[in-house]
Amino acid sequence: MSFDSHETHESSQPTQSQPITLGEYLENHDDENFYWNDVDREVDEAWVGPVERAGLHPRKHKVFHHKNKEYLRPPLPFIQHGERLGESGSTLVYRVTSPVNEGHPHPYRRTLALKVIICNDNSRPPGPDSSVRMKALEEVRTMASIKHHHLVKYVASFEDYCISTHEVKRRQKARAVFKVNQQIKRHILGIAMYPAAQCNLRTLMENIIEQPDDPSSHESWDFLHTYFGCLAQAVACLHRTNVQIRHKDIKPENVVVDDFLLPVLTDFGLSKHFEAGQHSSGPTAKTLKYADPEAIHETRRDERSDVFSLGCVYLEMATTLLGKKPSFAEQELMGEMPSGFKYSECLDRLDGYLLTLSRIADSITDGRRESAQAVKQILPHIRRMMDEDHRKRPFAKDLYPLFRHLYDVTTFAGPCVECENERMASTCSSRARSPVLTRPTIGSGSSGGGGGAIANTPIVRRASTLTGMVVHSSPIDMMDGIDTTSYEHKKCNGNDNRDDDMGNGIC
Ligand SMILES: [Zn+2]
Image (cartoon, rainbow, N blue to C red; front, top):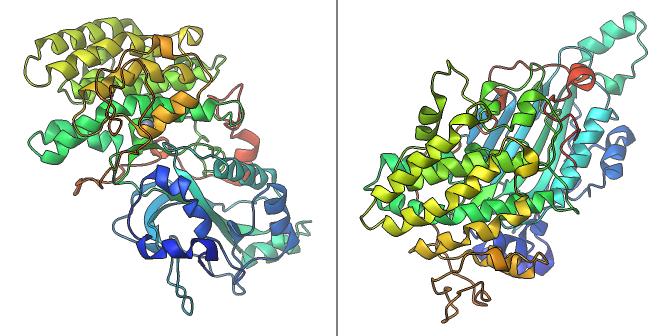
């Protein structure tokens, strides 16, 4: 394989191992420096054809072929660094770099997150031209097309498979009609993405409360104020008409925090059908904790289902900013519920909890008073986001102006330049409803009040001092306790019952 650098980007090589913000990564088209060569590449039309039809470029997506069909063990062909970032069911997440390619002076050195989905199948799997594989490849292509400074960036992908010779002989004796190259025993899909996370939002929030004297906790607390706006812009991007993706699993574990303390939404775009067996037994309680009422009751949904889940996450963020553990929300809302907490089943207690938070905010009189009052202002917006009736919830594209005033109370973070630029470029007339920013915009030398233009000079954010945090708990909590199942089972029965009107995540 090769991880050659394109000649036009060669000058950037010496600094490539250093982390850069996702915004810089996108601006530099850094992902184009990574591409696959043809060594060990599968050339069988049955495998290559669907890749081409899905619109995936062979430089970016490679199907590995091995003459002896020895299975490629994850995270190969990448090199793992540190602990595995996450593992759940048959999905593994690693922090990786590309292998040093002997004979080539410029391997791609950027640290990436690698998600590997392993599809075990002891029963009859589909062929390479199966609809399940085709759907997954199309979704990888959709994911590859998305560029946003708060959405994890696809860099490259690969597949590997092996054939069960035993399976072939047995089926041949039985005069089965399957072709040899369709007797797939195992199949993996790997997706390399940028950035690799420092931690996820849940870990960050828990650290803020559990280690209040740690300087990094104060820095995290400061940046957390900006996450409301940034995540709103990320979800709004997914919902945009030219993208039209519903995330359907927004939760703190799916918000990763990069080296610069910037939030990046992950685990979107890929159909859950491809992730072996995830929904064979229906969503787990963990999945449903942040799920919208429509998902629970299997009624009609639209993209505001994501807004509900985002509202739940915001509720925990607000709780954290007010000095309580994120789990405080669950404890207060749970009441007499036996187990399996779901926000959607506690909405009758939500107003009472918001009143509790409001009182906590008013009781804060120290240096965090300004923050507490700013958080108090957003509670009604969170309430609307969590409305039981999805038609009463705001759309994601309208959320950002409601949370901009939180920039005012930050010391280190300041306004998010990319999100502010995006707001200014937006055609929506949201400025009138946007609370006035009283804090001078960094780099502008003038007040940013009333939605004034953001500084042209980008904020230079240094890499965070965050260290020692547990990186990613389980990235795919929904898979807990679910056995892997066959392709055929998923193909026939794997429809996510939360996705009644949306199919595979594409609007
Ligand atoms: Zn932002």
